[in-house]
Each structure stands twice: as C-alpha cells, then as structure tokens.
Length: 309
Image (tube, rainbow, N blue to C red; front, top):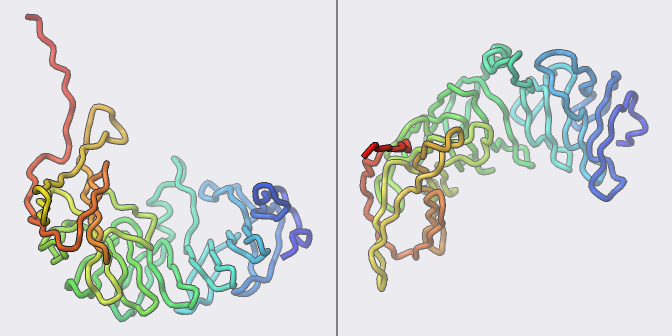
C-alpha cells in the first residue's frame, strides 16, 4: 500500500534507521482494500473507550500487518464470519488474529463496560463444542484455528488425552487440531512425566492465548506445566538427592509481602527443565521424581519486631 494514497495522515512512524513506514495514524475517512475486503481504518478518537493508536501497521515489504477499524465489521475468516474491531495479518495476507472488541480500559471505561459489548459465540471443534465470550481468535497461516482467548470469568470444557478438562483464559491448537496448551481455572490433578500432580498457575497471563501453562505434544502427552503447593525430590545416578522448592518472590504491589512462585516443569528429548521462580535446573531423562505436598503458606508478611528491653 502506498501511504501517499491515504487521506488525513496525521502521524507516520518509520522502521528504526529506515524510510520504510511501520505505522500511520489517520484523522480522516479512508476506505482501503485489505486481504478481507474493503475496510475503513480508525480515524476518530473522541470516545472514552477508543484507543489512540496507529490506524494501520505495515511489514517492511509494505504488506498490511494490522488494521484498527473505525467501527466493528463482520469479517469472513476460515472459520466463518466474526465481528472485528482489530485485525492482524500475516505478511502473506492471511488472517493472523481478530479481536471482536478493541476498547481502552480506563477509569471512565471499565472491563465490565467493554464486556457488555461482547457477543457470545458458538464453536464446534474436534476437541469440544462450546459457547463463550472471546477476546481474540488466532489462526495459523494455513487458515486452521490456532487459539482462542477467553474473557475473564469464562470457563469452557475441552477433551484432551489427560481427560475432559475445564479451561479459563484460553487455549491453543496445533495445525492438526490437537490441543497444544490450555489454562486450568483451578488446581487439576493429571498424570505427568514426573507423576500425578495438581497443575495450576495462579498468575496465568490472561492476555496471551497462544501459550498457556499446561502444554501437550501433538500426540497428547503433557510436556510442560506449572504447579503450586508442591515440592519435588529428584533422584538420579551419581548425584545426591535434590529438593526442588518454589522461590519466595516480592509481591509486585508490596515490598513487605513475599509470594510463592509456581514450579514450571518442561520435558523434552534431553530431560527436564525446572524453573522455581529464580533459578533454572536441568535433569537428565533417567531422573526419578517424588512429588510432595508443600504446606508452606503461599504468602509471607514481613514483621518488624521491636523490644524495649
């Protein structure tokens, strides 16, 4: 797209050190041709919920990368028609992700205000059928569904090799349609490579739907997870027994409070990688683990003790 063909360009951002346009912001009506048809990029910013953001973003090749829409539009996707206020594209022109809503949360526009504009959507997939409110829908470049991000408070149920599991925040799929990752809404006991354990991440990222804390390979085996309130004993030949416990980290909102980080466990062809919140530890494939409940309170308050003696 030639930016000189656009009307009302009020701001242009270039790739660092280059003359190639990366973003541009409009303040006048334009209707442009996109990979999904003719659309009107955002050009008004007066409403409380409207983000003041670039109307259009481009790849270095000039291909459209992102378009924020002036009004919500019905968009034809590989899965059917969905409403969108923001669309991301692959450089090839294939849809990468759509956002039905693109409001700005402030003191004047709350999450509840934004959610009230959300429409419930129905999905029928190989891993389950459900109806819910979604934040975003992501696609592989081939057009196959890649991920769905859920609104806070939404819980759906999906079929996995670990059983029928409830899901919050979102989930992702391989191009084959097999489950890649999901986020449990509460501690769920599943069988992992280190044994039966309750998987859960209390601080799971609710925005990123592509990678969640419970991950599977394409055959359905659990290859990564996070867990709280557990510690592990690691046994392997030629090494002393090692105890793996969660680190206590400062609370982001209080220097006087420490919280327990979840243990993050990943398995690959080389063995196990475990992150306790501060340090990453590696263990060979032949390691045997014992899973123990950790009854330490997940939050510790620092107390200043003074004495007159």
